[in-house]
Length: 316
Image 1 (tube, one colour):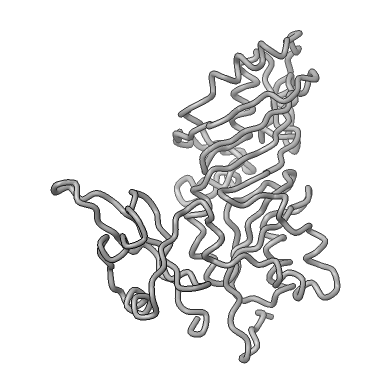
Image 2 (image 1 turned 45 degrees about the horizontal axis):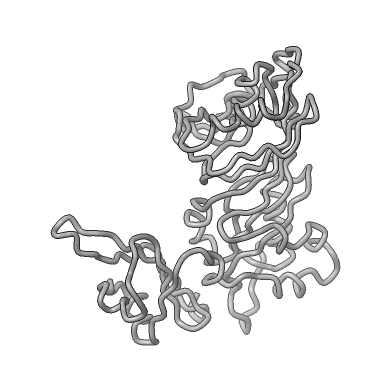
């Protein structure tokens, strides 16, 4: 049965940060959250593979409208590579396809190779990934023995720190752009080290301005009375992207924007100079809209565009 929101309660709109356990799929975590909270609409911002742990951002109600903004933010991971063995999935769940002896690497050698991957790099998505090829998921094709030629993508590695070298394992702290495949990064680094590698462990520490330290544990989703506890942990829509600047609008401004009005930069600039990029328009505790500030082609004048509107919870 589809969960129903009681008529005397406002729909649940927001974000819930969960510390996912190994062995759980991202979909199963969403399903447990929906059941515990009794919400109709829920999703997540960025899949974590079943073997991985850490921050999974659950989107509730109108929170699903924040998906693209949350997924575009920087990510931080703790990753452990196992050198000397390559697998078809690039992680520990796959079948070994090649083994090689592991050189007697010094930590400084590993750090030197890791530095080569800083900045913009090209990645080919793993064959076992959710990327679509001719309308089908790549992992569906791979399971049938069909390995599609997936298009390379450019991602940014902001930080790649080697925390420990305990051969054959290497542990890394990675800070990267959205869309980065850590499995691919690990395999590429393993190749650069002359040994090949697969991902032995992966933990997501942060996504945008949300951190796993503030996430609820998995067991909180299934304990008795979970709904009451989880409602206290829901992050308001306006607070789910703390790294993005916000500008307040009044009641009339919020009503007009929700009805399709596009405010000018001058109307929003009373609270300071508008910088290019995304902007949150808020009214009290409510997120009214996501806007983008850009420079127009004529004379470099700035303009604002409403890119996503959020209805008042009373009328959702």
